[in-house]
Image (cartoon, rainbow, N blue to C red):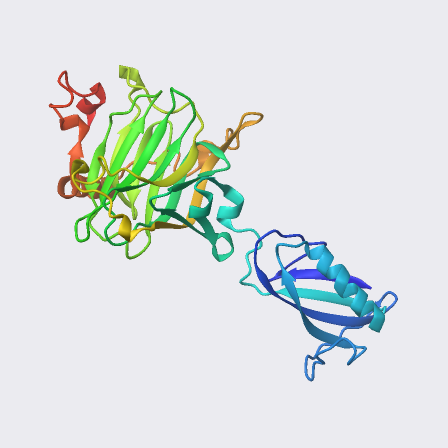
Length: 361
């Protein structure tokens, strides 16, 4: 007996998967004689059991993707071989089954295991916070420059005191970091989007925005474009902030340390909402943020081989991306009407003035 596995339009031999999904295999078997392949072309009056016809067989068998498909195929082979040893069998999976989802493949849960869950065959991830614990995840890969997109739906209702963080970060005391942080709000108030850039362990480069939409009712795309020349923050393709490389005037810039993608949800009621005056209402827990549609057009870093795009990174569209006239117009709109804090203008906090990069904004 011979067999093949079909997944949608693709075929493979000895397929193995690990996604935790249970479905049914649709089996179609054709009789053949030695080297001659004689397949039925019509599915009319398809028999429902392997014993019903020696020419064309069609039946279902339960299949758990947490097991190895080769085991299932071998079990089916025993049944079919007993009916007719001259068969070629095809096991067809439903096309909607994703055998190895994005979050399963590319991310790992780092804390709050029972508060972090992956759904829909690995294409959706949720992080939850209650009084007992928050949760978080990070990418398995490290990146050194790239364009990172993630769609997030933030905590609904009264989220005061909570913080949902989505950021790039390296390791160590002198780490680099590029931050999106969403500070929870009381119902009806705008969400505060907090951005920051760390270079060699130094941050204090915050800008904050009131989002111009409700980020809890639907998914919105948050993008970081990180190149050797600049860092761009986007919300739904609208640039809200640009941080340029000013190493020439002594301002550190994150361009040597590879970073992982991180996200977490945690309790920050001491400062997150109205300076800590509004506390977390635990009766509304769990607080849940949802993630989907992660896309990374980025250079994966390996300590053994270096950058995955060391030779062709300059060919990537994002590598030399600058804000054109239309994008600058959008940036100015976001900063004029929705920016509520800029470290460059905080004379009370920086008595001797902010960093020299502020002179070039």
